[in-house]
Length: 187
Length: 187
Image (cartoon, rainbow over all chains, first blue to last red; front, top):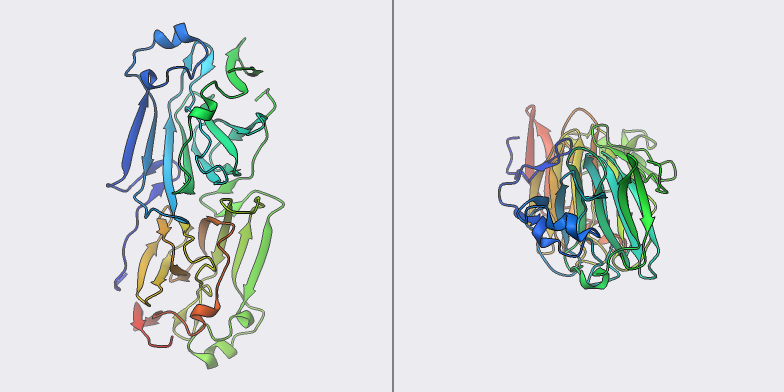
């Protein structure tokens, strides 16, 4: 290309890696996830500094209408019989949606509306998840490799973790060698 | 997966195809692009029903905060010495941004702000383009294969084609076997 043009950041769809150098990175460790997994004894038995997931974000302008791009890498593993998962959240601005694309690994996207109705979507490389507004979302890694998902969401969305501090209405566990979902009341 | 879960739509990142059956499709043909290419005689010499680009969109909820997902497939070709391109637009809601991901082929994303300042970003498989609000955008296929780009944008953004009816401030042409950008006053 022999004309003035810039090379934007990139994403390797297969490996789930950004090529950008100046992204923002945040690691969430087991010790950060107090109250998230139902088996507290199993959670306490895991070293607090064990990484559970890592989020990388590109730098974006911020403000009404602007969009963020990020990738979440969720490790495989379990706390007791419950699969590793992200904390999960509603957006602070409840009407703001989000889009996820599965890049690597396999898992489930747990969605829950404000009435407490939960559902699961299967995540695999290339899966497209259109998360409507007013819908909490959590990634669950049910596979044996890292689950990586690319996300696009409005910069004004914000995060509200408090609304689901008692958990989602479904938990995903391994029981008798099978992936099972169990309904819970106060997660 | 032996639990109640749904299989979402998918995108094949390498081929740029959606696997969803119920998407929305729109083809834009040469005859639809009156006034877009500067060489009117060359444009008139092309059969009006020649496909230039095709957009596929997934079904999304609509409303403030909701996001659309679509793929644009732009054919390779030229009108005179000017590369095939999309019409390009500002969003009707000017503050609303958009994100493009290059999937297949090579080209340029032409961006122009409301002050008329234009710039180009190189598109290639995996390139990530964070289009800020208040920024018009147009895809240009400078390669020899189909250029496919995945886009995520707010459902309320809308399209304003009229604001750039006289064209963008840059045109991308092939001259002496090279890709060249030329600045223009009234496109």
